[in-house]
Length: 187
Image (cartoon, rainbow, N blue to C red; front, top):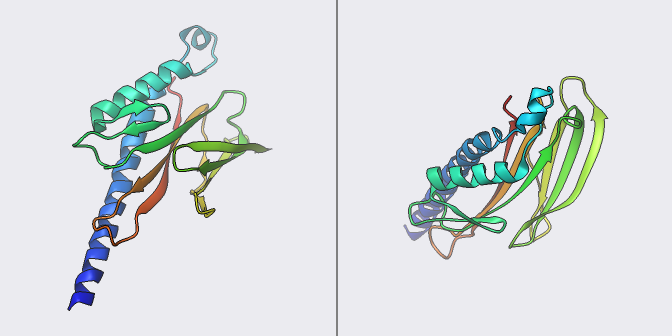
């Protein structure tokens, strides 16, 4: 009986983690969409769509606070009592500008427990319809997590977050997963 109870708790804990992953992805995409309206107005009149990165981060931060109750501290979003996660969201950003969005790009990040560090940004082949973006995250244990590739359709703002959540019960393993949002700059 105790075995079935433990299995049931493990299934519930895993289900809660998957729901959090979905919610965090939606939260990131909403915040990133808002950030991509931070376009340089002078360059835009000349037909060049380029991101004002400081303004983009401010817009991203504002939307994370509005929708999820998070406040930014360096490279992490700290949750409020009513936030989706109980632990901080560690994140990093990468901007693919109007000159590079047609080129494949491989981003390799390392999670060290406190930050997501960009180890390598390797450009690849040119594609007329937009470059393929491949992101991999190396965990503290050395495991490589590869996210599904994305195709860029214009200059893009890329946000990768790493979620490390405590389990429902302390005897269960914690849940850790990367989440990515890739948004084209809004014209």
